[in-house]
Image (cartoon, rainbow, N blue to C red; front, top):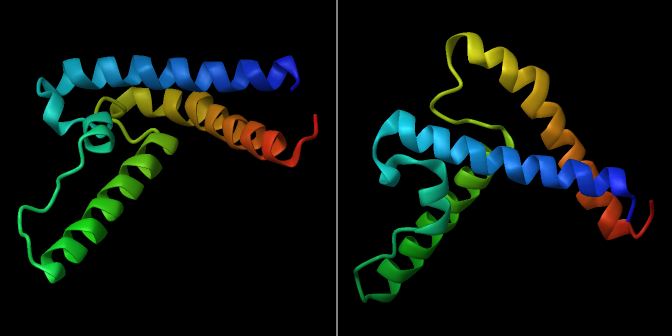
Length: 109
């Protein structure tokens, strides 16, 4: 794979890690963060078949929403003047990351 694509992917992951840390400091509680929702989905506490199915679908919906929030850089601290950073720097990184993944899957450079 091209080194530029690797650079885009690394910049995306480093940006996500930094954003997680800043969001954690902004919110003050790790349970409110996007990353926490992604890594600790709520499991249904019921044992009935319908409850398990509903719990699974709810967990999938929360997980997909958290992934979309990460790709769209929907973090709590991107408000006010920082919204410019989001649209000028972070969204192009996401586009480059998606392009790198698609290129990787297709096997091209």
